[in-house]
Length: 138
Image (tube, rainbow, N blue to C red):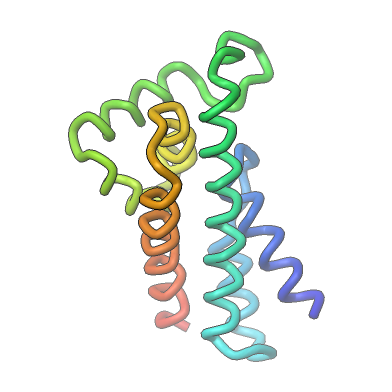
């Protein structure tokens, strides 16, 4: 049970502002063979998606603090994420798993008021496909 909780927590934190590697945690859990692959992939996907939801929510309400030192995303990251949205639209959220751009992308989705009903399935699908690929490799 500790493995499942740790994986969920690690995946959640990896989708927020904290530098964390949920892929390594998933690979380790998969390698142990303690739990079914589908369960580990589902837990990692769910935790990582919930972390992205936190970013989306923060984007809805906290942009006015972007000039503060503690603010989690740089102006450069937000500009890059906004350009992705302008170029590729809402479907760019399928790339929310990509390192460096993914977290600011989910934050930008909140800033740009992307509807949650669109946000959730796109982010879940993109992140899920990444974890499925990792599961397939092990």
